[in-house]
Amino acid sequence: MNIYHQAITGNETRDTDSPRAALIDFYRAFNHRDFHRMQSNWMQSEHASMSNPLGGIKRGWSAIEEVYKKIFEGSATVYVEFFDYSMHVTDTMFVAAGRERGTLAIEDNNLDLSIRTTRIFTLIENRWKQLHHHGSMDSPELLSHYQRILTGQ
Image (cartoon, rainbow, N blue to C red; front, side):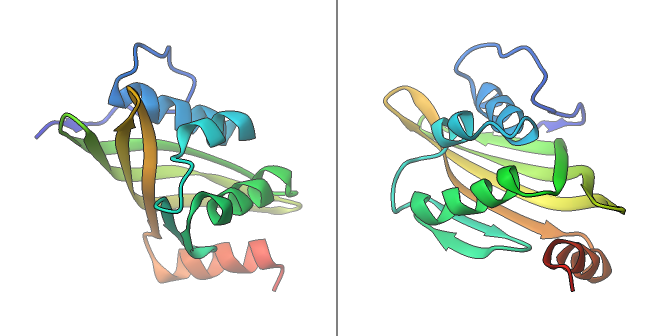
């Protein structure tokens, strides 16, 4: 198993239609609030799923897209990059498991983020599409602070 330490930010040159390129596309979409690119990155199906620290479990693209719309259209600015990850690749699926670091900024609040992250992609018509994402905050205190900032409580 290879462990990759160089971060993916979304600003890298996209090489081919490789698994790494699919990750670059995701982080480019997220960090640039590009909903069209995000939509293109995900499987457009009820089989897609996401588990995240604020939104809980979302099943199906229509539920997942609402989470991204709230993030992209909201007043918070969130930046994350993927690092310290491993890739597990088959002919039709890959898993990227690692860590995200980044920042959340809203009004006078700034928070450094540290998230354990797994992304699963499947090959559909010769394009990698994200099927599942799971993210967990590294500590309960960080999760609590993150939720308070974003919910205003």
